[in-house]
Amino acid sequence: MSLDPQPYLDAIESHLQRLLTPPENASSDMYGMMRYHMGWADEALRPLEAPRGKRLRPLLCLLACEAAGGDWRSAVPAACAIELVHNFSLLHDDIEDNSTTRRHRPTAWTLWGVPQALNTGDAMWAVSHLANHELTALGHPPERVLAAIRRLDEACLRLCSGQYLDLRFEQMDVVSVAEYEEMISGKTAALLSAAVAIGALLGGAEEGVVEEWAAYGHLLGISFQVVDDILGIWGDAEETGKSAASDIVTRKKTLPVLYALDWEREQGLSDLADLYARPTIEKADVAQALALLERAGARKYAQRWADDRQEQGLAHLRDAGGQPDVTAALAVLTLTLLYRLS
Image 1 (cartoon, rainbow, N blue to C red):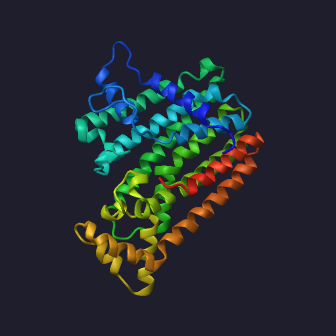
Image 2 (cartoon, helix red, strand yellow):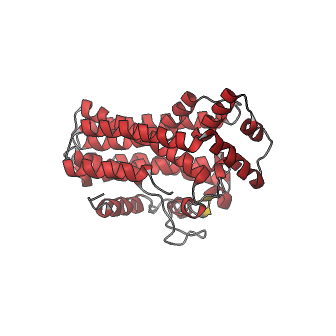
Image 3 (tube, one colour):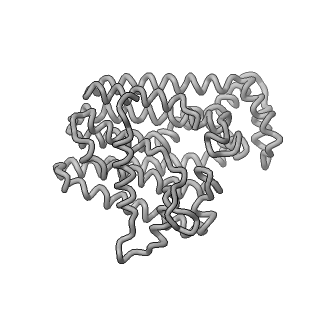
């Protein structure tokens, strides 16, 4: 993107650091666990520079605010609130998925146990709400602040609903592509949609324009998740931070897998279904699964699916209008996300 993202990212990181600095009357270890998850502390909770998240959602929020004509600096607390909600969900997600590593490091629950990791996630969610209370002091009208808080809370509820479906799918033999899209609309797209909608709202956009931003963010989230599905099977472990074909070993019902299962049923075959019906999938079975996905054309199908949603999303971005240089940067960022490696 021609617009330099570094000033935005620096402001986000600085404000997140401030939000997660323990007050005098708080447990420093609890805050230390939050800081560990964010990549600022080691396992002994000492300061450390470790791999961090992309900070994609808060960056999108600030860019949408600026594109809508607002001062992006005044939206930093809202952007950080969105990032904290995202990370609270990851702390819980790691427990639910039994994930032992994130960003090449042990997950919080493997270090301090499930109860403490749950509590850490809950605390992060609470801090996100405190962050949004800073918006009025930065000049935003109370009704816009309340509207932003409502959008974030609604997105959080949709995120939880999507996670519920994802967990439920693990017990289902057959999951349709429509059910899958409903799941990722909550689990991934809801927060991305809220990020740009809240940014535009705080930038002064009218309701109709805010909805165009929300639609753009939703479709960006859908395509982002499908690319994540592709990387979960065919991604480079060095780039993704996950073991090769991790989504196959864990039998995740991602879009490429669902398409291949549908394709097999239409052909009167059941090779992949039989493989997924096994009690466990060993690393030795991965090559067979990859060959079956290749036979069905699953990777090409998923990439086309992501491309289509991305094109629809860019149409909504154009309809939202706004500052041309910022919307152009967002369009470039959208394409970058679609063809990322991690």
